[in-house]
Image 1 (cartoon, rainbow over the protein chains, first blue to last red):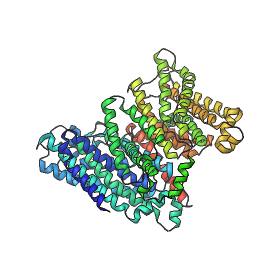
Image 2: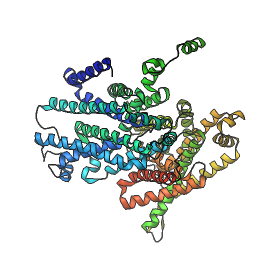
Image 3: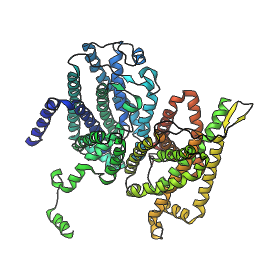
Length: 350
Length: 288
């Protein structure tokens, strides 16, 4: 790591820390952006580095969301009565109860999906290509449908997460959730950047390029595939827990296991920025969030139509993403050796 | 008696699923794409029949009108999107058709509203076994029409020139091209035929069951499941596994409750894939 990149990281960190005070009106948007970046970056571990295009990371996201909220309520009050009252103010969390519950809830929300990913990983990750994609799509939708039928977590009518305690009003709430999600983003970035410098990334890339050969070279591919999925699940669960508190209301198919929206968004963000790069998903998520908010503001009512068109256009005309396009244009910047004479000859041919 | 009821309901329902799955198998085999928007095409076909019903025409005529309209819708989708993803990675086609699916879902939501609707055919019901088993005649009608369309299609694929071209392209697109088959046209026709099949199935579903703009995805997953159980190009297998799925669903509905019906379908897909994965991994193979 050279001096310039340190300056860049510290600059981004400082910007992230002061952003809610510079743009106080956009705190919620910035928090959602952080969560989106976490989701896109962790999707990239599967889709970009490992070549396993999953629609199933939404499972861990939704699981984390429900777990965090359930723990937060269940630690102090009976869960069944809470959901039955539909978020009426019969039980009120004191500030210390709220923050204790949130802390424990986030830990549970991160750890349990990791264990789930480890348990189902062996069965699911044996599938390849489009079978894996469709299987994980089914998994995500099934989780949504099934959780929509379970009474104790609100079934079809939804689950209200504990409201933020009455200290400092809306400003404090926004800042709390912003710093929580920004913290998750920083944690994810450090973790992903750290594993991308190790042999682990090379093994994932080997699996992507040719899994049979990687296995023939003596790599226990299944072990690494499951580890990769568990890392994704950890951060997806964390992001889900934060998002549940931020939105304040959990619905099984529209918020938590939203395979049609969030499940596709994370794929799209990573593709838009460029699969298989560290910065691609981050840039892609930022761009995508601007697009999305633009749609929601200017095409109100038609936003999903615009979104569907956007998906088709990105996938067909832009499958390599922004980073892929840059890579083609400036290969030297990406550490590829380019033969000058060869390049000139190509230009002349044109 | 409930067992008989569920079995008969499931059988009649399964024939419809098999019709949709046949379209899925056709395009998968010929063009090597997986169409997530399959279910949305079905729902769109259903709305065409529903609209005829609203304007006072008997919805059964939708069985004729809907495939004709859907054929052109299918051709339009092919020309705009699908022809750009045919030769690419399967995941690209999954994502692109996912985009189409979201698009259709929302457009239908705007055009027809988010209510659950049903085109009432007024066919009445048949009672069997001392009035213990109730079969709506519309279900029998829809199963009959599905079988007729399936037979027509099989004969068409076997006998006609286009059918032969489609089968040749499915076997080897390059060789077919060399021998003078315009594969681009064949692909367009295949997608059109698939959309037309979806149109028939949708019209029948709007008569027998209910339709709603967001109900597309389960139909896609059902047809995908039927195709992977039966295999590409195995028509009796598609029919059998379609009926099996129909019976499974009716029993899941009865035993687990209606709220878990769709969930159990999706879970069954996961279980089937995992089962096949373990079965194949004994021979150190995987699903291709």
